[in-house]
Length: 444
Image 1: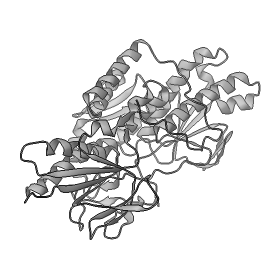
Image 2: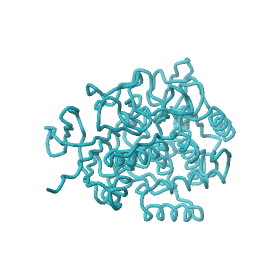
Image 3: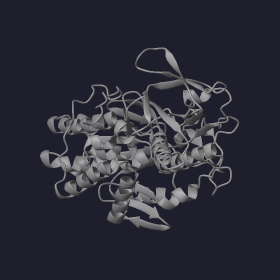
Image 4: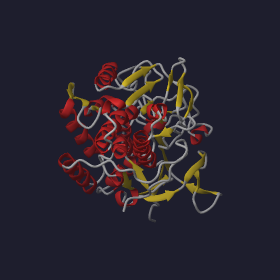
């Protein structure tokens, strides 16, 4: 009798889920591997490589390079487009709602991998977000529209508000986005004779005590100094109290005349933020901040045949007792590799290995601070300026799947160094910046 293949179900097509499926494919092709079929539940047939969203928003990288078509990357994994709405751990069944109808269909499995990510915090009313490629393109169009408005008005109050750009959130996304978009705006100013770089005001507001709270303190200090040196205002301990286009009032009572408030995602969960709806399944162990408790080998304790990785997972950090790995793309990539290895090891009856957060840290820590500035820490050495930018780009190339994707991005970077892209708005910005933008779809 032929033994049925093991059914592996991966829920979530973000960094952790995609790279887990990709690693499983490679391992299952090896000689002597157990027979298994991998399914990936994801709402979209593409992965958005979010570390490059700011480059797409600033126009230094064509938008379609930020999207990775999953059907081209994953050759044997079966994609199930939809959303997992509930789990029955006792019968090993996931219920998935697909575009075919409102009823959730049962999907049986033998091994479950949970990588649904976190639910993004919604931006304040009328604010722009920077979570998807559609958000990035809408932000670019909005910023260029403000330059048009400022150059065509005679009202100094309107001009002041149009030329003030406030970014909320001092995590990697905010620290990356502000200098990238500032550089784009300054490139565009050559087409606006009445505007100068000193007319533009750039503000980064962080509710916490320092920038980059998910990184070592000295990294956040360097980023703060670099951004201030470039002319940005850094407001620490500042959160918006009220905002309407034209006026932002901070919780310290200060007000800013601005028509642009950009809400950037943070890796640090806000206190009281609800967990991902799927994680409320009974018997799943959650941490106080709503993440899924895991062992060091990425198994979910108390729930056999269940694994987790990425932003969802609270994975122990061996360097700090009682602490967990910060939720960011670097750890998601490393955890995906270890999870796939351990999953296959258990099917063979072999021992698993713990996820070594220090190994991921040795791969490097990278912060983009504009097209020509950054910070990179690799194997204990710290680089700044252009060398850091080169290391950062090499890191991104190493994480992009397929040689074809790497080659196209590398060619684009080389070409744009010789012939910089002209800032162009793609589509009209929404009348209400808080309204979601249409998704540009999968690249051709």
